Amino acid sequence: MKKISVYRPSTLEEAIQILSAHGPEAGVYAGGTDLLVRLKNRLQQAPTYLVDIKRIQNLRYIRDDGQGGVRIGAATKLAELADSVLLRQRYPMLVEAVNMISSPELRNASTLGGDLLQEVWCQYLRGGYSCWRNGGYMCYGAIGDNSYYHSAMGGRLCYAVYPGDAATALIPFDARVKLATAAGEKELTLEQLVPGDLLVDGRIQSHVVRHNEILTEVLLPAPKPGLRASFEKLRPRGVWDFAMASLGMSLELRGNTIQDARVVFGGIAGKPLRERAVESFLRGKELTDGLRDGAMAAALAGAAPLKYNAMKIEMAKGLLASGIAKLSETHAADPSHPV
Amino acid sequence: MQPIQAILFEPIGCLAEFPSGPFHEIAALLSGAVKKKPSPSGSRGYWHLLNLMEATGLPGRGSLELAAVRAASLYEDAVPALAELKQMGVPLRIASSLGHAALTRFVDDHKLGPFFDEVWSRDNAGGIKSIPIRQAAAGLSGAIFLTDTLAGLQSAQAAGVNAILMMNNPDEARRLAGYGPAGGIVSLHELPDFVRLLVSRGKRAVV
Image 1 (cartoon, rainbow over the protein chains, first blue to last red):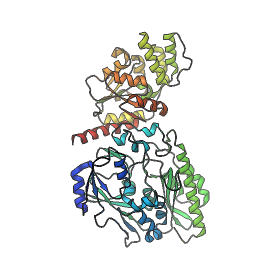
Image 2: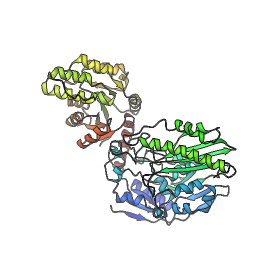
Image 3: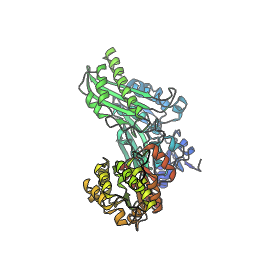
């Protein structure tokens, strides 16, 4: 591991000052389950100056926002989300999704912010290849083994998939995030936070957070009346693993009619992929198991699989079918009790 | 790698899919022998022909090259990528070992003229393989040349130009990645980001 320096600021302002002073060589250190591995993997983009935000008050909480929604501090551990009674009551699908992220041990250390902003887990990047994200000029995943960690929906220099599950589960609830910046607070939708690969401060990354900005909070609005949500995930190992394909879906029902829908695929593209064609297809229809075929036909028309990962598209469509079946079944069993 | 001063394109395999048949036909005419297992790849057929022309000193066959050009199909991302690069102010040049007539026909057929500020063929460059590349890159220290074959990589390297692999075929690209290309792209639509990344990395280095 390269030689590093660690700062332990006690306020956000101090942390931002340190980050600004060191430029892209500095990085936020919270749970460390991604950052420390990046350092261990000797990635060129791994920071030299770690700004440990664990001493900063008020970044680790799960609170009722007083309007039926919930606010979650970015440094809250995934295990704390999984154990939260408040989240279980209001967003059971989110709790279900969090329980599918990595292992219990890692959930005790990983933070929500870290899950949202983690680096991709391409085996070529982590294996030290000189790829786009590691100072080089080629994507080895595009021409090598791309069966697992790579996009089946095209790429933009780097073909690695966005690996986080939390974003896929949060977007169906129209979650937003807050960033602390040198110019004050900034609020974004989750989709704006992780829009897919882009150049930020001279680096390719999956999120828009600049080197001197800190993700501070995730805001979940009150669940709409009649909202039903489901999270599905396929992974190579059932115990813990990244998604080969995942699906976060929410349906806003009035009676049995779908008023609105959010359909988000994970593990198949460089970002959590909101599939608006399926959302349009579902809107205005009666929720029945019979929607599966039409939804699958409408899904992922822009697929551009690499040599070894066309099955990801089939997996994602399969998850869509099972998600619709599950929501249809639970709604039929108890229409008065949305989940 | 330095910021890109110009991008040099070999049309065959980098801007368009060419049939291999006409190139194998010319090769058979020059060598008097027919390849038992000719490659179905237009690029490989073309560069095999260039190797043969270089070895024998014999000229190409313009009429058969024109047949290849007529059957070529432009990649769907070529025009959008060229337009964006042009808008970004990146000089674009063609550096090919095709004859002048075939190259002009290719550019005209696909209405590519406005994108390119220079077109180098074997006729105006005075030779094949590395010679058109060297001419197109004259006076530039940051030119890149796109190619999808080993002979193309070697020609660029001989011309002192950064060779960028067009990774059209993943298996072939994986093999060629071992020959030291300066970089590689899967699709032409990545070129504008490539240029931006180099500029951005250059700035970081200065900072």
